[in-house]
Image 1 (cartoon, rainbow, N blue to C red):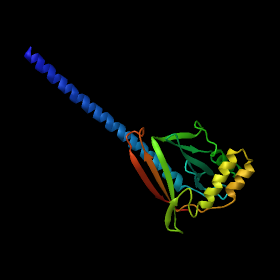
Image 2: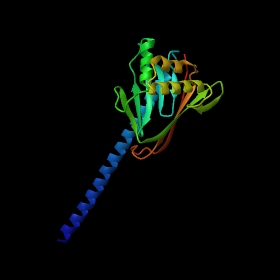
Image 3: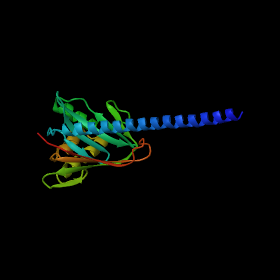
Image 4: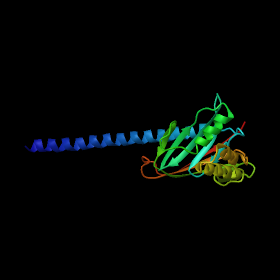
Length: 216
């Protein structure tokens, strides 16, 4: 009986050890997957920015605090991309590749009216408490808030006016006129700051990523 009790105790201790190892491996695997997901999102972010283009038709770059909109070069034309933080979830919407000015303007306007469930919109990261975009200008030699900067101030104001016009149901001509009323130089660098909180899958604190832009 004593031997059986000892064997049972040892078996229980061994099982606890195995269970702890399995749990540790599962947690490590989940963390690796989350980090790979984060790296994939950042890689997509960099691809979008490296292919940014100013068509002189719609704003090439604009950040309003909730959404970053940009126009991206594609083999067949130009594409409007919108990164949006809504309900602590970062999403990415990519419009159709436009081959005409009218199609590009339509996609740009649509980016101001995106629904939570939208075609071509992907969930990128969850558990993001806040984010901020900064831009760098070689002319001023400094970083500025993407919502109110030197080189981009007029463009952001135009984008905000266009968004307000779109929300109020103004005609497409009025919306595009507001957006094109002033032009802005594309930034020479972009800084992304993400603040993670509960629900981010173990990714905590702030993440900062800087990217230098070279315009053709």
